[in-house]
Length: 321
Picture 1: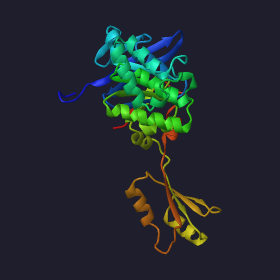
Picture 2: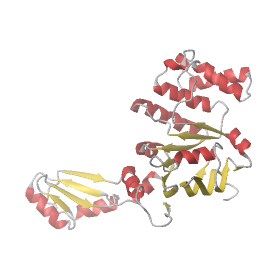
Picture 3: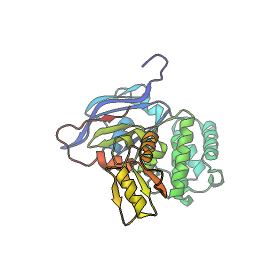
Picture 4: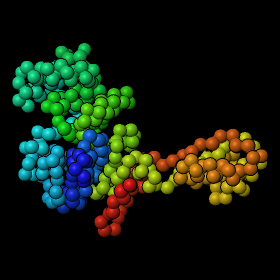
């Protein structure tokens, strides 16, 4: 790191945690740049929630080094807690209180004082689109509104790092989209987000970088596009209206797969413009192609290719450049 570069918001090396005979985290390495959205992607039991609980000082770890917001755990746990907030899988709001009362209560618990707590509550109610519902009991809120209130409560003390542990669990598609917009706005203000999710589209939509967690270790890490490039399966699909055109194209494109009944041809490709141009250039001008579709691997393909399979010895990590 040069003197002009900001330090990582989170730096984890060789993190391990066992519960009895079960190894939950097995030498986890993780670096989260400040001011970014970093997603931990994995199935149930992969170690996502345990990682968040360790980084947020809620549980201890067996071995490794952990630095959060420039503070080392476990010795500087109090300093870490002052710099972070955590939003879990389910909204932790008091349903007997109004939205405003929930926010003011959090402010006072953080020693902001009555006046500052009310000011922050008003600011966050406006920011999260809850002004009209501010003085209603949160028990009357929709699931999406409770989720927004829960996230607003985690921001009362203006944390530098926010842990979002599966924040859109149980939300309908519209509410999920609303939460995504809120998360992007947070990062625009300089907040660092560590997001855990099982929703592949959520990681694809939000994260600057994604780590695929399996068996307590990161098995691949990079941007969404970099991870997709690790998995084979991209192909070009050509659709024809005439069987003769299909036969001529199949003869020109050796190694293609022909669907005679569907009058279509599938050709492996890496999805790049150069590759597609070269493939189409091999087809004679007299051959009429009706439609062309490019299919590239998505995060579903990455997830299923890299997780859930038994490994001999310690798994390796693939880091896309």
